[in-house]
Amino acid sequence: MKTLYVTDLDGTLLNTHDFINPYSLEIINSLVEQGMLFTYATARSLVSASSVTKGLSVKIPVIAYNGAFIFDAETGEIIASEFFTKEETDRVTEVLKNYDISPLVYSFVQNVEKVSWVTSSENDGIRRYLELRKGDKRLRPLDTGSSLYDGDMFYYTCIGEKEQLQPVYEIFSDDDRYTCTLQQELYRPEYWCEIMPKKATKATAIQKLKKLWDCERVISFGDAINDIPMFRISDECYAVGNAVDELKKIATGVIGGNEEDGVAKWLREHAKIYDTIRIN
Image (cartoon, rainbow, N blue to C red):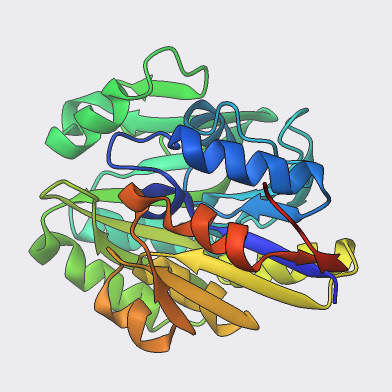
């Protein structure tokens, strides 16, 4: 059966240094050349994902911003997107102001993709985020919050202490107009609370891709809480060895960790395109 293979990036395909091991690149690229339908689904933007997947052969669209967008990875063309309505953005603005949280706001301002934030509200987590994205043309620093919520918004990231972000998470996770996640940043102490439109999930985006490419099955790989929706709609789903327990509990199986080329080794042994792929 025609199968779509989807992997998360951070903590799954990427190693702890935020790149793909050469062995994994070799195996996956060889399989893709033989016809495997392989892509990634990440919370990263296309800009950020492209920088950490250099050398990876992806011939079908990729999923970014936790499913808010599907992009052509080569051209940057938007294949599908999910935005907030005005009422939804007004509600997010109200709640974040009430809890004195200044987020990173992802939006299209005058049809140009931007990441906006108030410089005086930077904390260690936000500063690290910015440090890793020097030269990114999307960055839009602001002196005040007066224009923070300009444009067509599709994603909010709040970075801080868990205790500060927990009430915000509880509000939006209980509101069926939104998708909201709260999890600790990989290899870091701070937490990220991410607020998205309801349909902005990896699961919804994968289902769109599955239909677009006329696939009969989905096999996915992940490590974190935001991969749970993706696992639930997959025919088979595999948690890497370093994955959180919540994901391992619902996985078809547990494979090698991200430092051990777990995804690539599983694909090398199991991936099928009409007939068995053979790797010498």
